Image (cartoon, rainbow, N blue to C red; front, side):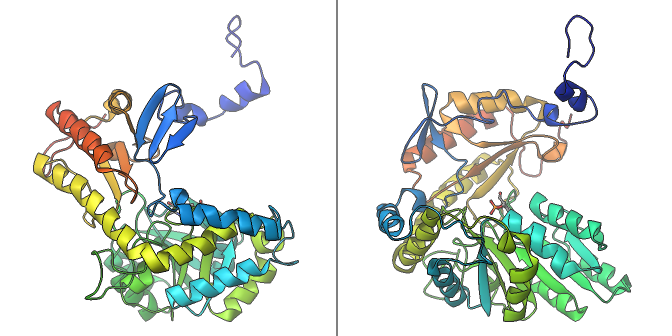
Length: 424
Ligand SMILES: Cc1ncc(COP(=O)(O)O)c(C=O)c1O
């Protein structure tokens, strides 16, 4: 904006004047768009300040695991830094090895790896939907919505069903005349930390002749097969939500990523060979995008090896640390939607207008968390999200619990069964 005339002066100013854009998102807060200058375990340095990192999705701590780190140079020596063919032209055999590992771990028919889940949604949802109807979970991840938007642009209809409500989906599918139906939803939700009742959704979807497409970005590596021998309620082997619910892949396409629990830039989709073949020729990320770098392929392969030997012990530690935080919150009477014990703990504020001050307080306490602001979340859910990893320390968790205790005493946090909230 030109200060003298008050007129929009550059093309950027004029563009920003045309509607709600980045100005709605606060980037001046120290916990937004931070530059991390150094790390030491789960401690991070921003400027002069060391902070305990509770914003990391590296749930198993593979980013700091010596065995994973030391595996990478050997792959770089063998393959260079980056293959650079699109996958349709050719892929290092490492991709095939990862797909074989995934097929065995997930007990799925076939798996295909691409750089990110976002790529997969944008490319595959439109393919699966064709000109049919997509039923999408109202609170599905933004990247699923973006895939649905591409599909809509190619002739699909998009309809929303209520969050965590298989009965609503049932009613919508019953009323729908379009025989081509695709249901898209999250596995473990990235804000609440809760998985949906996948058994119920799978049953409804199958009964109505629809295909269920599930993004389990946060479940893969954390939840898995249930058994009497499991080291914690997350189950064993981290083979994601379908196996965690004891389901098969007959009518389910599972999408997952390595960028959270496996600390790598890579993602996968499961499906029958016919789907894999279709994606190879029709999905732009396979045909045209650059492939994942060799370090990503190497960390994924090393991660599988560590997961086989130490994964369940890491998940037990992750569960223990998360339980410490959830138990402390329960004792304080502080509300969180988390009812799963997953290491994703959303903590809404009583007054959404206090978000900056609460964020500043946490930062001054030496804590780094994800701020959840309006309009990214509805006003009633404005607050912050805490994520734990297996390599957070007890001392870091103590620091977090102390800060939550102080915020609760100041009346900043929502209390369990609180009748009235101040929602600005
Ligand atoms: C549920 C969900 N899906 C997809 C993504 C994006 O994953 P990727 O980085 O592989 O594109 C995220 C990341 O925040 C997520 O939480």
